Length: 295
Length: 321
Image (cartoon, rainbow over all chains, first blue to last red; front, side):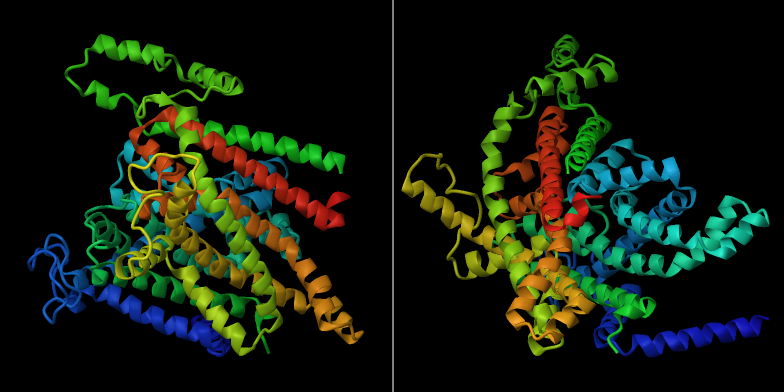
């Protein structure tokens, strides 16, 4: 039993890989993303210094000792950028997972129960989508900080998650609407399965591809939102993400002083990472939706 | 068409009330606007109580909410605690800067994305297509504010051809003169260019994908098979049908104007509404915040209505549903 399942999984993975590797962009995205992931995981070994310690004089220019110079209090910028990978990826991913989870549950419930509840939830989604994302996220950060109880780091994640679930809810809902009409769901109802069981056991696996693609796409978007929030000074000041580094570069006049090594690399890292994540998402989408395949 | 309009108007009204209610609640969830005064030992508790009474902050929340709505109906936006001026005046001083910067740039970038996106989609698989796709993907992935910083660095710091910050030279007051206008335009050029550049390239890929989808439709194949001229198929069959999804997505950019404003105005130290709203949240300047959001919500609603009307105009099926 177990080994056949394992074999089936391996077969599926092989099939996935044959389709996935045909898309050059998706393949390149995956390669870039894996490198960036490695940097995040092994930041301790790659970064020459502890980015939270003063290791040089302030405002040093790039040199062999400090590849990207030092910031206004003598921290090594290269190490900041390396460690920033970890924070940026982690915040993006956690926010995406949380937001997608909320959206999936709302979508399942809305699509499965239908009628009044569906109407209500979808109205809420419409309303949510008409509020500008960044403004809403800023607002939520302010509210969550005030409410207290959770560390700043998670406040940002929660705020981003709370702004990002509605599109997911819409997608999952429309998929649920068609899946619930299938005969096997009727059988499950006839056998006396509870609504919760039907939603999570029988429908959820069928919307899993959508959810998976959404997690990836949302990660990219969440990373961009995080960078904006941190740039505006709303990030956790004790955690160095790329956005936070840019925030300090800006308020410490890196731009006017022409210290390009301070503000160019973090932004470039955000762009490259977000792009690679989007390309991976695109690759997954092509795999799950054969209509997008070009051959 | 009439029922369609009536239904849309009703939903818009509900959305509007919902948004201003949410803001009312969220604003109060960020804390007490008088914290600063309360912590100041020179101000007696009696004074604080008097200020609270004057602004109705001592009343229960539902009463505050009702008087807020009533005041809105009378066109009274309240008083900004931070600027010590009526909210309406604070906003009208800043709003023109934001609108004059963002509306034209969104319009121009939408237009460029639409026109060039269709051309690029038409040539799908070509060299041009892959170049535009890669550039568009990259620009889409850059944080907007960072792109603005890069532009500022190149044009203002390295080349020194554009100013570093502001909407006009510091200290300069508004006047109806060519001199003022030239100064304004000189400051305007860079933020406008960045906004348009990024908007155009970020939306291009979307228009291109919509176009490619439509090119796969049978009616296009039929039109080509009938031997219709390429230009005709492109304009009448592809561009026309591409318009529907594009109107929705590109139109919503007007509704999200404030997001762009917050970042642009932060990078360029531009005196607009974006920065104003941002600061109002953290100054707990409730009335200013609510006033700004009312205007924003109204613009979101108007944009949505216009999109719907355009939709009904472009697609007769919508009208008769």
